[in-house]
Length: 271
Length: 253
Ligand SMILES: Nc1ncnc2c1ncn2[C@@H]1O[C@H](COP(=O)(O)OP(=O)(O)OP(=O)(O)O)[C@@H](O)[C@H]1O
Ligand SMILES: [Mg+2]
Image 1 (spheres, each protein chain N blue to C red):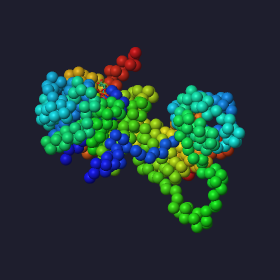
Image 2: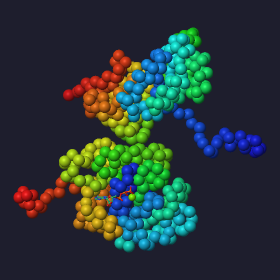
Image 3: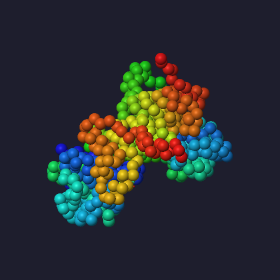
Image 4: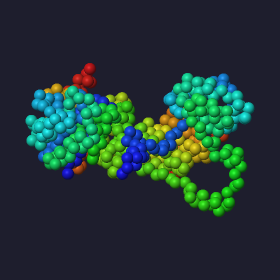
């Protein structure tokens, strides 16, 4: 049975697409047949981060409109055996997505033997975001440690548990909180909310904390999901989160300021 | 199926819309005077105190406390103009006499029946037989609504006819309402309105007072004041002398 997981946030630019690419890659690297769908119709971001934009022939909307088969539109990832990308259309508007169309694509992915389907949601709480979350079994709610992002995540959690198909059936969507762009030094200075504050406000289970990390920008410029960068803090934190998503117990790390190297400390003292 | 029967069923279940009964909170402006100048001044003061609360909120004019002479002289149209200028949306009148019923119709306002207490006074109904009272009591034993999950920003929960118990937090941007009391075993960060049908004995209890707004029987207190009033304490909120009071809950050790 395929698990449908939406990556959503309400607020824009908090790291949904970065997270979708990392989590789908991480699941595939662990041997699970995984598809990642870009629901951000009109913008097309995921294919850039996954470095397959030049291989896009057909997209999600083409499949929904019957202009191409799902198999024709799915792009096989170059680095990962088990990973497939269904890109968004750059030219259509968001209303091209219909409940029936999305459901049909998800059912076909199940029939093709996919174990995980990751849905990269657009920002906001409008049609596109609703389509991305409606069929979800689980949700990764991405929040940055600041008040407006947390408030939007709260709102999305409310929508998930009242408007999704699971909610309509009287069931629960499994919630996972992912705090991204976490900067322990700024938290210590009181410029950002701490993990405990965010957890308390949202009252939901913490999947992981991804530190603010230069490696993310580098990775997206190179078109390599950051989880492949196994030396980087963000890469390691995403790998931990994927492990937790599949049921492993892994301790949280990168929650406190990085230890300065001896050189940096000496330098600071003499400065 | 005959053509007319088909048509009838299509109309029974329209496709272009769905009709649903709904219960929505509205603000009641219970008039104690027909003096528009005085009303305008005091209303302006209220609105500037908490503009967000009044922004485009639907408003009901209660006129049943006015004397007959005041009802005859009230300039309903002028009152509507004043309210709209202050971003309120006049929607209905309650307890209107014949002239004000007419005026309401002309101004496109809905007409609501008098509040219950008044009505029995006016229609002088015979008091119900004792058995009937007992039966009505068991039947109407107030339903308590229990919610076990957090109430999130943008959500609204209304316990009609009874108490509301929330076994989690109420988020900023969420709203809980009850005809009776509200108990929150968590933080109250949004809005809580108890006694929304006018029960002045209704209370709000919460484990941590971080509210955006609290109200009991239409009397309310907003964020700025709440912040200096047992913020983040476990409190109860009730009316005393017609004003909102906030006191800490007794501590156990
Ligand atoms: N952990 C991180 N450290 C540093 N930068 C990050 C991190 N996560 C995301 N970013 C940066 O934040 C920006 C937004 O990320 P991303 O595109 O993943 O967000 P999004 O939520 O998908 O945005 P949108 O709402 O526009 O779809 C990008 O420039 C990305 O490189
Ligand atoms: Mg995105």
